[in-house]
Amino acid sequence: MGASQKDFENAMNQVKLLKEDPGNDAKLKLYALYKQATEGPCNVPEPGVLNSISKAKWDAWNALGSLPKEAARQDYVEFVSSLSPSPKSCSLEGPGANRSLPESEDIVVTTEENITTIMFNRPTKKNALTNEMYQDIMLAMKAASKDNSTITVFTGSGDYYSSGNDLTNFMKISGDLKQVAKESSITLRKFVDSFIDFPKPLVAVVNGPAMGIAATVLGLFDAVYASNRATFHTPFSGLGLTPEGCSSYTFPKIMGRAKATEMLIFGKKITATEACAQGLVTEVFPDDSFQKEVWARLKAYAKNPPNAMRIGKQLIRSTEKENLHAVNAEECRVLQERWVSEECMNGIQNFLSRKAKL
Ligand SMILES: CCCCC/C=C/CC(=O)SCCNC(=O)CCNC(=O)[C@H](O)C(C)(C)COP(=O)(O)OP(=O)(O)OC[C@H]1O[C@@H](n2cnc3c(N)ncnc32)[C@H](O)[C@@H]1OP(=O)(O)O
Image (tube, rainbow, N blue to C red):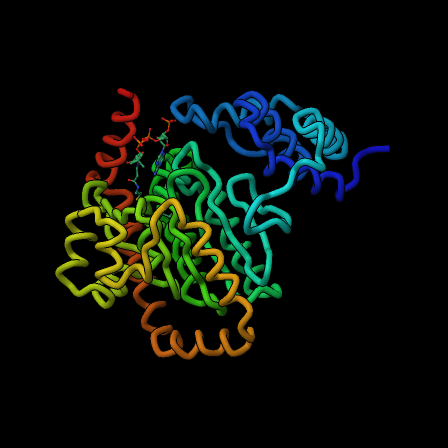
């Protein structure tokens, strides 16, 4: 008998819990089998050779030809079992022991003690946000807004909170650049809307540096706890870009126009202590006790009556909502133009060529 949907879901959970990186070949195989099992034969255009990662993923998926979905599901389950022979040993330490179905490989969603945690889980890329991750985060937030948790937390795995938008995203979407910019603008608007409209207390546990959009949306969180290792950096101008995540409104409001200008226009990187003094961060903790102290506090807060917290949050947010949506729309409109500008293409190219030299 083939693997059931439940077996497949369990296997996906096991992948998240692997203690050791299985290596690129295994990850490609997992990716390909997952796509085949969920979407069927490869149905997307072949990426250009410059997009080596996307191309490798596409090749792996395409190589499965017309393998039926059920067979791919079975192969996936068997392959995962060969990677993690002892599923019982797969327990997550600390917050999030009860894992809900992960939305994608790069976002891990867990719920424990009334707290739903959405973790960026792409540590080898400093948790840079791919196109898929934006979609999966929106799905995870939608689910979190309706689940039984009282507080929702964002955090990152590894040494970064997140380095922001994956600067190779544009190269991974096929089609004309203007169309890609238009679609990205729509995605960004919806993504930021999810933060503006999120109905429950939203907390960031900033374990390390936060860059770009990962830093800007913090202005839409209800509390931001940071390790003293964290830094906050929005290097937009250098990339030919302009502020997003409502930061053109929230940052001046939180820290004053001059400090916001230093960050958003001049690209000044600030420490967690500076961010706390400027009001972007709620409290800074020494890195060695950060996780313990923050999670103990959050678990205590999460015991409060859920409706009171939710309604209280909405009272704080309601006077600003309309304004925030207007700001978001305008930032996305402007960015759509920036993304096709020469300044932006040069900025991204600079990052990519810096990489090529490494
Ligand atoms: C729907 C669309 C929405 C769009 C919303 C727009 C948002 C705006 C932004 O968020 S702009 C993005 C701002 N972020 C950056 O500019 C960060 C760029 N990255 C870096 O500057 C550095 O990588 C670093 C400072 C984060 C880390 O430097 P370090 O030297 O410690 O490490 P590496 O550079 O070797 O990084 C390890 C690997 O991770 C890859 N990577 C890191 N960040 C990104 C990123 N943002 N985009 C793409 N790739 C990133 C890096 O390339 C290395 O990969 P490799 O090992 O394959 O070389």
